[in-house]
Image 1: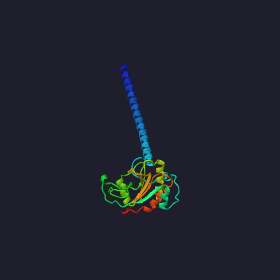
Image 2: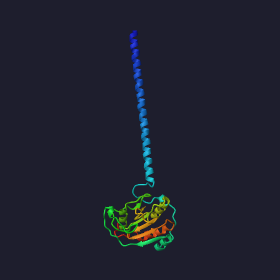
Image 3: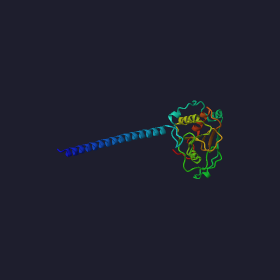
Image 4: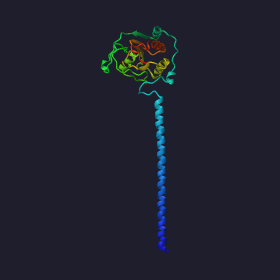
Length: 235
């Protein structure tokens, strides 16, 4: 083989080796990209799962009502001692009143939701009732919806802005005692009522000026007396 042919063959082999090395490096880069991308996907899935789990397990500050949770229901409240509504209300410094019906008209217009009692116990209300359950701390349905719930025999337990989260948890425990929230609503009052805590049924009102350990018996007895006593029974 002549020297020229040898040189040509040498260059061909060098070029082939360079091309093979370049191809190998490209394959390595692609493999690393796939690995990195897979890791990012795994991380993203983990973050998403964490968000979902965290969101599902807490109170939340928004959203609709839920059933009383086991953690909330475990809040410390005194056991019931007084089973009489009038005496338990008096001991707690609460008042129990019955009012005439203000009507049962349905209207979607909030301007028509005007009431003579505070919190309301009857009157014109939203065609859609509020859902049963415990509303997240500091939230509430519209007053027109909560009045409609009274027409269906529900008990509306509501609290003022002075009530703390710990006290709210105690109210939730009271709700849970009543057949795990059956036909009850717990929410923050939306009518600037003159009470720390109140419970309403259709044409009935329990109003408590202060939050104290004796209000729990009053709430229990009010619920047992007036639950499912509305003019329209709805399961």
